Image (tube, rainbow, N blue to C red; front, side, top):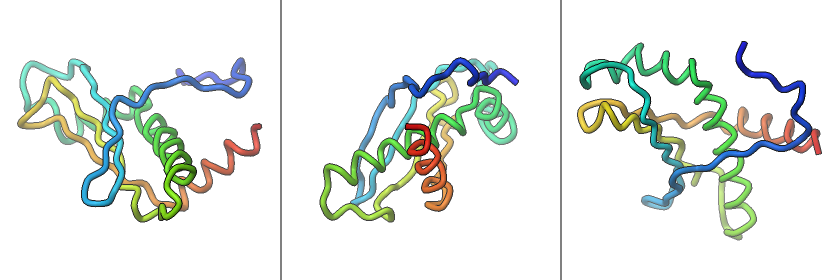
Length: 121
């Protein structure tokens, strides 16, 4: 309900906190300072998933991964989709004991979103 795209005319603005390569795979990391509770026990399981959904971080990392994949395809001649590692969301208030979320969406989902962006331009 909070997402409103009616006034959006083709541009999104966002910043990936960190992009890194490890063992031949490329990742994004996004640092979050959300307050989910007073100790690490609040930064895992269902509470963590609720925070991701409530702030639309799922959509954010999908957009970021599409952007990273496009960038890597342009810059690395031998880049293959299998080299896209995924997205880490690091909830700093829960770390190091909790607060780490990782996702690697299916290539078909990233392809569909990439095509959707292409259609809008």
